[in-house]
Image: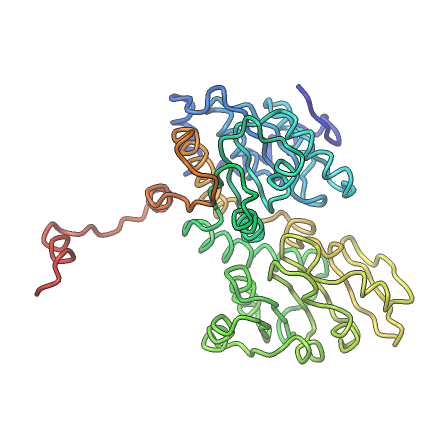
Length: 413
């Protein structure tokens, strides 16, 4: 085994965490049962760059059951659950991840994962995919998957420029992923991270959510449900209009900065909150990011405006500005739901990671048949995941009668 983790002695604790997640992920466990019998991934090497959590571990064990050899690096320096990393090493995964990596260590671990010469890449944010292309680790690669909105944006940019050299399935764009993982998973886990870090009361607070994509919608919905006065900032007129119709106040960040108590970014873009906004914020404002990279809150600007910085609580840094006001940055501006909490609940990751497992099987089955571009998850996979999830919940739905199916095919009444 090749691995680089914090402490292999944490494996027993990790196994218990993984068992808990397995009990909440029935769809993926059903796929594992089939994979174990059929071995559709025999001889396939997979290099993955994902958040090393108990839910990811359930996916890794499912791919192992299918016959794959797996290397795993972290997709965020602060998201690794060290006990899970240890347990996965004992399961036979080559893990290169530990919590608190430097940026240099983070990319070195990605390179270590790629040196295993993967047939399939799995990515969360596209750092592994970009590194594989830039540093030429793609000799054996037949395809890959991407888990996040941010990553899909980056890989589509690669495709547009002709830089993409193998097919990528945008798992993030599956209906059974973004309608649930992005909305309900990000919504709950982001609020969870803020609560664990600060223990503040949300009721009555002005909570500013930057971005009204599916992640932003989920965050806004959960904050509103806890009694917050939610304000949305957007650059897209359609999304801004949706937010208005959903009952939220919509305004530019320049105005929201003056009245917000808690700011949460979820845009996938840079400099969403920057110097001009920090200067307007009230004393005690809390800053949190739920976007993939720690670039949405401009920390350099915050440092420049500050005369003092100190750690108040785990995951809470207090910045004293030149005007005497104090601002509080959570989790170093990184993903607050994973750095200060445990990430998305297992039940919602059940669908996302089922899409991952089935998409990898699809790539193997269609080796050499796909162009070097970004693909949607095949509709039959998306619908299969939805069907299996309903079955696991004990929910039955109606079926079209033959007459109804015939009616929907006609244009004349």
